[in-house]
View 1: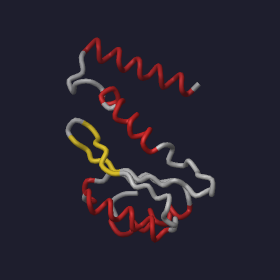
View 2: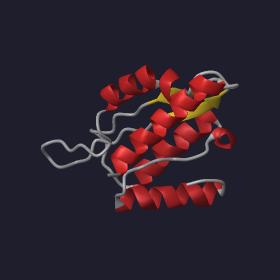
View 3: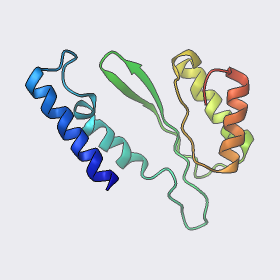
View 4: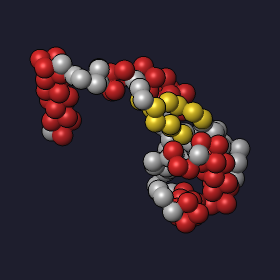
Length: 129
């Protein structure tokens, strides 16, 4: 039911844009559809598990640009022991390379170690998470 509602909403939005014209150009969703598909294919599901049950941790960063969002980085953490210290270190490294003032949201799995690492990031930067 909810999916049907969302599809109708998108179709209505497209229809209105066609009728009145969009002053901002085409919809961002349409422009980035191929790019998002490529990234999803590269990363797979962020919660997919391998045989040993360790989560495949993929970390992505995005930087807001005038034309939309750009994919910046992915980290394959299959060989890294997943604990709060290791995750915090990875998150912090990416945030420092991008610039914390440019990051709006950090998205992680809903695992306890991810939450602890996220709280540490929030404590350090006091701006997001």
